[in-house]
Length: 297
Image (cartoon, rainbow, N blue to C red; front, side, top):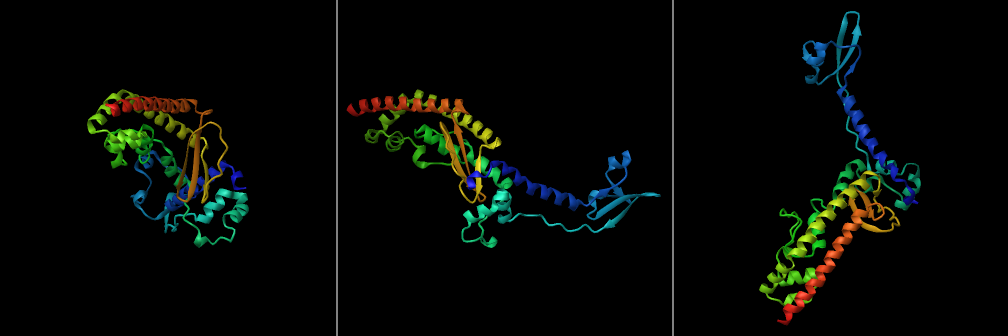
């Protein structure tokens, strides 16, 4: 049932921002009637020689037969409105909240026992950042997975180090490439392999960067066009998608989200991924031949 909730309800999250804006406007507490001269506008609103920007009190300005005058009043205290987890849930599910509540909390719900849940407007930037293929905390791991060659990183500025990957050794190269015979080779032969495979690795490195960049662009478009599936406290129901090129799930702020990139919507991303796969296959074949030669010497 919950999978039928339309994603268009993401607009509801903006309601809390509207409430906060209203509270901010009310806290200023300046209600003006009538007009101001150009000099007054240039200097800012003033009363009895005082600039209103420096006056913490509310000033109600109105017209009188004698001209404009002001009456000072104490500004009312307005606390910032922070929605509770229950408020966020009700806002998201709307008319279907009763059904959602029964499924999410079959034994009943007590507001003080609800897990932490922030409005989607606050959680959205976290989800957007974590979805990126070349995000600060995902790029290194993602690149290493595709490159599969010790010593080659996404950039010179490594955010997430991996001691077992950073140095090219017989063991690390054997594990990365899946060629078990490499583990028996000495350092001289490992350096020879790295040199002989340099051109293939340079081309693969370039295409992987191209793929990651294109993937980031596609993810951003999907995010901005409501292509993201999300739900509070539970994983959104997966969609049956054909030709899925990439997918990722994220959990943050009490929200769970999922995004998918498909070949029909992003054929250029699918082509780059296929090219990465082809270059790796060719490298694997050439590597196997080279290792076979070296182990027989």
